[in-house]
Amino acid sequence: MNDLPLLKEAQSLLDDVAQLRRAIHREPELGLDLPLTQAKVLDALQGLPLQVRRGQRTTSVMADLRGSQPGRTLILRGDMDALPLQEDTDVAFKSSIDGRMHACGHDAHTAMLVGAAKLLARHQQALCGTVRFMFQPGEEGYAGAVIMMDEGLLDAPRGGSPPQAAFALHAAPRWAPGTILIRPGPTLASTDNFTIVVRGRGGHASAPHMAADPVPVACEIGIALQTLVTRSINVFSPAVLTVGKIQAGTAANIIPEVATLEGTIRTLSPETRAKMVEGVQRMAHGISAAHGLEAEVLHKAGYPVTVNDDDFARFVLDTGRELLGEERCLEQPSPQLAGEDFAYVLEQIPGAMASLGTRPFGYTEGDAPNAHSNRYLLNEEALVAGMAMYAGVALAYLKE
Ligand SMILES: [Zn+2]
Ligand SMILES: [Zn+2]
Image 1 (cartoon, protein in one colour):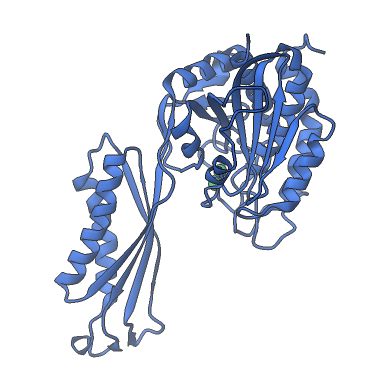
Image 2 (cartoon, protein in one colour):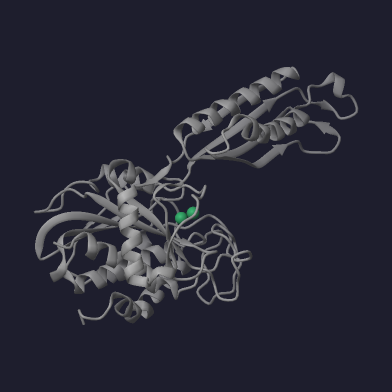
């Protein structure tokens, strides 16, 4: 068995891994408390030569596989949580829980990581050091990775050395299935959210001069924030600002007292991030004041920029090319402005996050439903490359 190339071995695990993925998909759980998912993972890891530890404050699972020789320790990470949205697909294993869906591929990440554990357990003899499997809850805004770090993720395994590197994969629904893309340096964005509350004075829609209407002011702020991006930010250090929610009023003939905007800021550098956060404050207060109204701005700092270590990313690229072939392991041309709490791990130790193409059958790059879509689909054939990649990176990193 040990002579087979990893891809073939991974292929032989696909049925089991796809079954696990479907079971997780059918029962999505949110946030930091994922008891059903945790139970499925623990059950699937049964019988493997792992040292398993469950989280205290979350339903995380940390499992160590010790090689035959001492050596370094590598973290392989898979996140397990779903999203609060209603699934609109007709797959047979569709979410059975209203208002929850695995629409970011975390079901697949978890299942692939289990597959990688099975694969690597077969190659235990060839490992020098420890592979630490990190099954993480709460990626979608709950910073579950930080809790796992608080609970010893970066501590040395028994008889080993503290983790020196970390590797993660994320499903990419628009890219060719089974393709790996990775980029040295910044690869995902920082994610800050803001809420702007514009306060005026309510009144009759026919007499705006006797009221202080927050609606046009909120609209003006919404537009001005887009100008902030194009006029204040260096185009080579990108920022995206999206106002995703505007709320005001109750009826056509009433001027409301309050209008609210909610949005998110994505950047790839701390400087641009700070400039955007400050700019939102300035615009909201300044524009409101110009109209004689007041604004309150609430800022909620999110995840930092996810920065791949240059050397580790190149190592992953080389490993992937050997494993999958040149044409299926590519350097990702540009970062993406989604965010990831794996960023916190990469602030502590070098490592990388790569994308795994999971484009569903019958779709093109342009029309495949994106992550977080209610119509999100995932091509399970891609799980083979994903498992092989997790295992291949670990085998190459822990070689002698
Ligand atoms: Zn997501
Ligand atoms: Zn995700």
